[in-house]
Amino acid sequence: MNVSDFDFELPEDRIALRPAEPRDAARLLRAPAAGPFEDRIVRDLPELLRPGDVVVVNDTKVIPARLSGVRTREDSVVAVEATLHRRLTPSRWSAFMKPGKRLKPGDRVRFGERTDRACLLGALDATVKEKGEGGEVVLAFDLSGPDLDMAIAERGVMPLPPYIAARRAEDERDQADYQTMFAEPEGSVAAPTAGLHFTPGLTDRLAARGIGLQRVTLHVGAGTFLPVKVEQVAEHRMHAEYGEVARATADALNAARAAGGRIVCVGTTSLRLLESAAGEDGVIRPFADETSIFITPGYRFRTAEVLLTNFHLPRSTLFMLVAAFAGLERMRAAYAHAIDGGYRFYSYGDACLLERAA
Image (cartoon, rainbow, N blue to C red; front, side, top):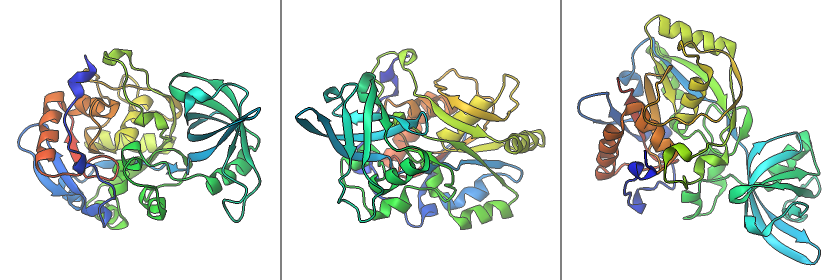
């Protein structure tokens, strides 16, 4: 398969810069496995699912992972920006750096200024330990553990996706807007955006209809925004992300399926995690590890029958995943319907409810 097979034209004015208010007022395109599409709203979700189904959400919490600073080398000082990607040790992070070409191992980087906030713990300094491709580096911070976490929280900003950050600056509203209501364990540098549509009222209505809700954790990395630079899909390599599926969650999901219920994944992150945790027999098992699973058309799904997800970038691994789930031609038609119908795209945009292709 060629990456160009997953391309489509999207008018720039369809890129959402703010979420719907209230969150469950976002539009929802229902795409059953066959038949016409339905234009609904997220608030309709309980009536579009069945009693006995189980909704699976990703409860990761986004950290303020974008840091600005200066690189110092002898008498040379250069402004740099880091987007933390994946924690490696209590004091080390993998990060994407700009301008990456201006960095080399041994460089010192100071993030923020001593006077930029009223209550700082001290200097947030790091050493570039390794340099990879595409501006990815390993940063060894002078601080470690909770002290490092607190310093990052003080100096970092919410890492809005590039397609939003290029059109407006991050502000105070994003501190709440870019977190789901389920967010608890810290570790993501990008939100599991399908979960942004949920409200307490919506989860109450799901429960009243007999639809369960289970939580998993996948800490989303900045690699989710990286463009696919190869021509052949099979040549692309995914960045690893850490995830956990608790034993009680795995048991509950297996029991629901045995009783005839469907697994409804909220977002591609929860789907990728469940597929990583499932064996060839389709049984979901406890999981606590990194996953770099790359799902493209031809993949045989073992877990979810329904997927609630936002509208994704052309030529992206996420659009490849939904094409694998519902069928490439079906997704091309759904996206054409959404574009013609004025749906809002990407992280703060509207959603679609997909049934898995047979």
